[in-house]
Structures are given as structure tokens and as C-alpha cells.
Image 1 (spheres, rainbow, N blue to C red):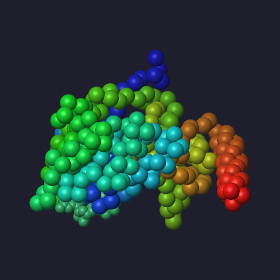
Image 2 (image 1 turned 45 degrees about the horizontal axis):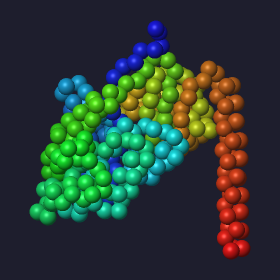
Image 3 (image 1 turned 30 degrees about the vertical axis):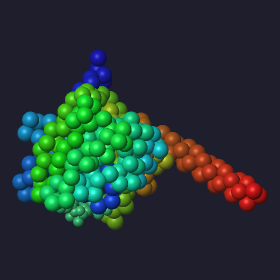
Image 4 (image 1 turned 90 degrees about the vertical axis):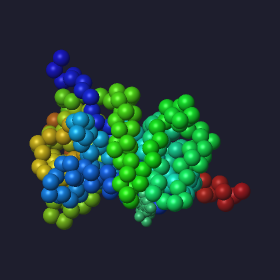
Length: 302
Ligand code: GTP
Ligand code: NA
Ligand code: MG
């Protein structure tokens, strides 16, 4: 059955949590382990995503996007790229408003949570209190007979990181994550930026199929032909397979986080589809504005 091969794929993980609870520090710490493991020289990783490769051969893809905003934007656009949310809770601070927000985002998207209680190196750390707080928010932790894993870490001292990675792999195993590898790619933009020399660049994650250099694509309402694919350390690649974060070059305009990427047969088809989507987006935008005006009017009449 050509084009139908379904293979296990790495989990795609997003880190969320309250302000200053250590999301960036934790990602940095995890990224260092991945850089140390993969690149002896420690090449700077420049994508909004990175991959931690384990000795077992398993790997985990982390999305490095600034938490909630990107996650919500993607969810609103129906882009379910995240398999697992790491909920970072500072052990001294405990559950805070944005912790609750993260929990409700994850729940709404039906994405399982793995809790990382961070800053466990601090004298004021109290992970028992965090557990009780989470339980009272309805999170069924393993400790209490549920199935949500909780790991104590310190991003600062780099402790507990192996346990966190193991917990994520275990969660992934339970989810039995698989993807079709052959055939046209279905992918999503994680973030996009304009590069002076190279033009619009999009960090993308393939959900299914394989994205190949040279293909014509429609990305959100933009279009282009893939001129280059780079992996997380900036090396050129011929193709991108599921859960592998890549940077693609060759788009005519700048897409948005959450935009879908579809492969089409020709430039003509790409232009047509893009033009159609642009029209639809503009119509939706105008409709939104006029709805907003109508609401304003209603309110001012009350
Ligand atoms: P925002 O992106 O602003 O929401 O913050 P964040 O969640 O990314 O937190 P960040 O990584 O910026 O860390 C906030 C502060 O906590 C910094 O001063 C870090 O050095 C400190 N910090 C992070 N992790 C740890 C830790 O494990 N132990 C201790 N003691 N401090 C930590
Ligand atoms: Na911060
Ligand atoms: Mg941060």
C-alpha cells in the first residue's frame, strides 16, 4: 500500500505556565542537553523549535514559541500541532492565574498535561503544596491515583531533566503517536519572520506526509515554492518528515503562526488558491469589523 505507511513519530511538546515560573529557563536547559548530545561544537539553534534526542534513539520535539499566545492562536485556527503540554509551576510560588489559564487551554484543546514543578532548588520550594493546589483544580495526579505525571525539576541546577524527558516519552507511548510518512505533506507554521536576504521564513512542523524541496505550496493565504529546507541546527535538508521542525524558504509573503501548509501541483494552482484564500480572509475581516460596529451601536443604544 504505497503512500499509506504509518510509523511512530516523536511527540511535539509545548511549555506553558505562569509568568516567571521558568518556562524559558527550562527550555534553555533542555535545549542545552540536546545541543550537547547532537552537536559537539554547540551550533546555535535558531528555530522556534528544537529536538532532544535520547540515547535510546527516541526524540522529543519542543516548541519554543512564547506559550499561551501562540498556542491560542494556533488552536483558534484549528492547528493541533501540540501533543503534550508541559505545565511549569514554580515550587515556591505555586499555582497562579496563568497556571490556571494554561490548564484550561490544554483542557480545551484536549491535550494531556505533564507537570514540571520547577525551582525545586529554592529553600522556599514546596511541591507538596503545588500538588494539593493542582488536585483542587481537578488535575488527577499519579500520586493520587490519577494519570497525570508530575516531575520535580530545577532549570537553574539542571536537575530532574532526565525524569521530565522520560515522563514525556511515557506519555507519548500511551498516546501511541503515529503518522503517515509518505505522500503529500500536511504541515503547520509555528512562527514566521522576514529575513533580509532570504525573504519570508517559516518554522514549520509536518503533521503527516513529507515536505520536499521544490514543491509548490500554499501557506495560509500565501504561496510559494520551497527553495530550501533547514533543520533545527540550520543544516540544509531535502525533506521534512512528521514532527521534525524545519525552516522553509521560498514563500512570496509572510505567513502567520498556525497557518496550514498544503502542497499543490503547480505554481498556477498555488497562485489561484492563495488568491481565493486572500479574498476569503478579507471578507471575514470586514465581516468581523462590521459585526464589531453593530455591537458597538447596540451597546451605545442601551
Ligand atoms: P516569562 O516568559 O516572563 O513568563 O518567564 P518564564 O516562565 O520564561 O521564566 P524565566 O525562565 O524567565 O525565569 C524567571 C526567573 O526565574 C529568572 O530569574 C530565572 O533565573 C529564575 N529561574 C528559572 N528557573 C529557575 C530554577 O529552577 N531555580 C531558580 N532558583 N530560579 C529559576
Ligand atoms: Na521571565
Ligand atoms: Mg519566558
